Length: 338
Image (cartoon, rainbow, N blue to C red; front, side):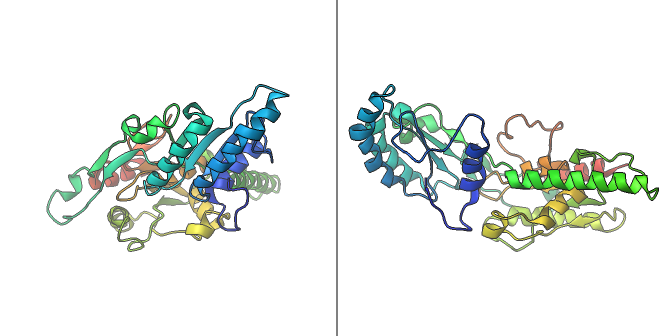
């Protein structure tokens, strides 16, 4: 849900939910919401979850009787998915779970959200006093204890945390680009114009002509992007002597609605051309697409703190974490050394 969505508004519903089901070997779409054992995946940003209770009530009267003839009568499992970066829909979702739990049972009702911390409010109020760049970023907030919230009374199991992922079309675009790159390198080698040595399908091995990219334009968001502004300005010093590194400190391709619904070739090319991709959270919330997109593009990912890092990522192994502006400069320079 929703079953229909306007062009340009698909976002995560299309790229992760629908595509995930379509590409799965174990899941399939059904047009019958009352089918026994069905799972309802509900994007609460794009669908009014209050419309679910009347439909769930129909299962009690028609679905259960019909399914009892062919299989064990099972109520739908309902997963409410909140792709927002804030708790702005919490009251709405609490109302939905309050209505749905008596109908389908709290054991069949689940909630997934991007919000796993509260109290983050990173500030850089004094960036001129000596030693300011050695102060750790903060405050970073603390983890949410969902089991202490009223919502826990109406949902089953633990609240699932939604991490930003990589769209399947972006991953496929990178794979296609790498195949074409290897084919062209091999053809050039056979013609004697160059050597195909090192030509690999793995983007980690892809030659990179530029040094560092931070996809941010200073001043673009003065409410939630001041932390990113400071990071951009700190990296700016690496352009000039004695460093003279090649940096991109700006956006690439379109952003917002269009950027997240269509392939942005300029953006993906920049991911593949730079050795280091610096990622930075917003002032008041964590997580964004850039971290995982950096990893799938094979670049080195340097990020500010998250608590915790996404599963299976380890500081110093899969990513590099910087906790101060000074540490950012030092680590970038260290890893750019030949």
